[in-house]
Length: 204
Image (cartoon, rainbow, N blue to C red; front, side, top):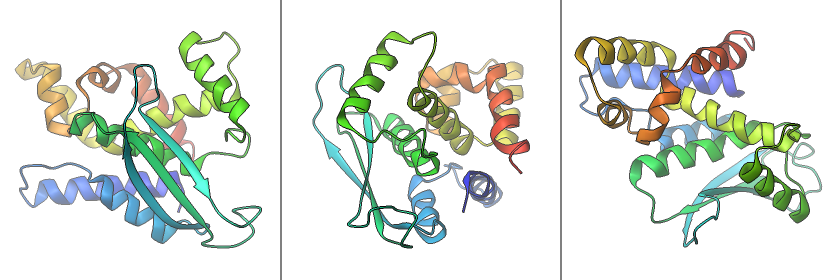
């Protein structure tokens, strides 16, 4: 399974839930998790674990654990651990969970491999450098990939039109998709379409 496969699965899930008349026509993160475990060759399991955090700490963190030297050498040998801030609201947790799941698709260059690289990434996230590292670009891409997964383009375009016609607030849109309210501006921006073209249309 690759990212495009997962996106189309998310589209199918939300369409089926909507067609069935379910009040919460959303993409459940647990179904994404199950699909990744079943479809990614090197992956044995994914665990989510809440933690206490202090101000300034990342809201989520992705780690891979295995006794094997390389996760590509032995199928089904790696376990992903995703930790997240336990005090987040459910909409925020859903986005953080999904964003961290997107790191399963990271390239070798985009992976953070040492504590020094991790500290460097946190500095970049804070300072937003002119020449970002591959790890910083990967982190940014994970956020957009998560937004595309949780709000597939068909439903996003329908909601954008409805929001314009009915004057829906960002809160209304966020509640519909069950995503954090501050992300709605990105959802309806031209960058959504650009990332859709890059990650879905051009990748197929």
